[in-house]
Length: 134
Image (cartoon, rainbow, N blue to C red; front, top):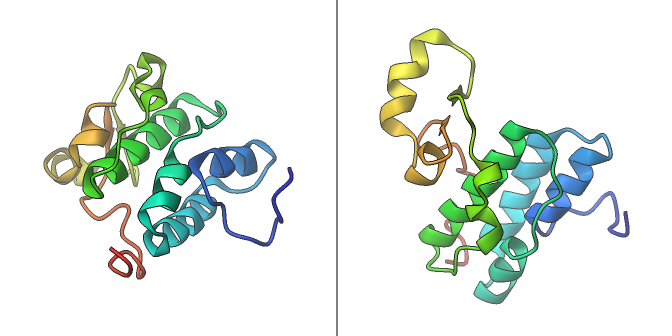
């Protein structure tokens, strides 16, 4: 990987490359979100445009949902790769794995996630920096 392993991922593709090389997916995604929320419009577009490498059905669908959700939240063009039918789960996935949360996640999950059969909390992508630099 060309990127400095100590720098934060600047794109969803970088998140996928790090995960493919053995890094934990969730921390890499959180670091990406920190960078995305602090970025200007041009850098946000560039962060979502390149298609991530394939990891697993859940991760592939999750990255597509993140790309669509962030695009809609920040009035950016939704990247075409995120609409690939191969990035939609056949069976529902509920984040957290707790049976008691399923009803709440069904209601709260943002549309970009629900469309891909992923159910997360309404604030799944929240980070402390998210309201800086809007």
